[in-house]
Length: 357
Image (tube, rainbow, N blue to C red; front, top):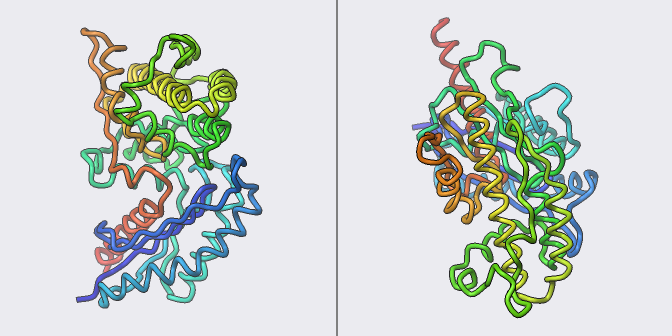
C-alpha cells in the first residue's frame, strides 16, 4: 500500500534540517546539521550561513531519501513544506531561509506536488506540541525560546483571521535567553552554540552539589552576583543580565568551580524570569495552558525546576497554569514541525476536494 510522505525543509541561523513525515503525522526520517562556526565567534553572517545551507542540503536530502526508501519502498512524496521566514507576521524576513525555499521549490516542481510555506516559529510550535496533551488544543500560549528568539505567542486556532491566530503577548524587548547563554559560553571558551553544554554543566548532580553559592575562601559565585530580571506585563530586558554575566565569565574563565557556579546561577535567573513571565501572561490573557518550544526549552535544568519555581512565585492561593514541554529532541531547530504543518494543509485540501467531488 502506498505511503504518502510530506517533505519538510528548514534552514535557520543554526541548522540545516530536512524531514519526512506521513500525512497522518508519523515521522519517517529526520536529518539535522549544525552550521559550522569558528571557535570564539558568536554566530555567522547571513551570507555565510546561506552558503553552508546550499552546500549541505543536496547531501542531506540524498541521505534522508535513501534511508526512507530502503525502509519504506512504498513511500511517495505528495507535498513539500518549507519555512520561508522567521515569524508569521508581515515583513518578517531573513536571507538564510532562501536556501530552503529554493530547494523546496525545485523539489515540488520536479515531483509535480503542492508546495506549502510556513514560518520557522510555526514549525517550532508544531514540533513541540506534536504528541503532547496540547496537540489538539485550540488556544494556548507558546514560549518560543531559541538562540535568537524569546517570545510568548498566544496561539488561537479558532480565530477566523489568519493574522490573529498568533499574537505576541510577552518576551524580551532586547536580546534573547539563547543569546545570553551563547555570549557567556563563548567568553568561557565554549564552542558556539553553547546552550547544550552549559545546560549539562548546570544539571550535573555531582558538580552541582560541590559548588558553593556563597563566597567562601574566594570560591564560587555569590547569589547576589547576578541581579534578578525585572518582568512587566510579560515582557523583560536581558541586556543587563548579559552584561553582568559576561563580566563574571571573564573573571571565572579557567576556574571550573567558578564557571559551573556561574552557569548554574545564570540558569536560575533565567528560570525565575520564565516563571514570572508565565504567571503574568496567564493573568493577562486568561490562558491556562503553556507550551515550551525552541532549543532553550530542551534544557534539563529548566524542565526540572520551572514548575517548582512557578509554585514558589504563585503562592498557595494562586493556581498555576498547565505547562507542557514537548519531547526534548523536538525542541531545537528541526524540519519535523514544518513537515507536519504541510501534512495538515495537504490533508485539509484533499478532504475538501473529495467532499466537492
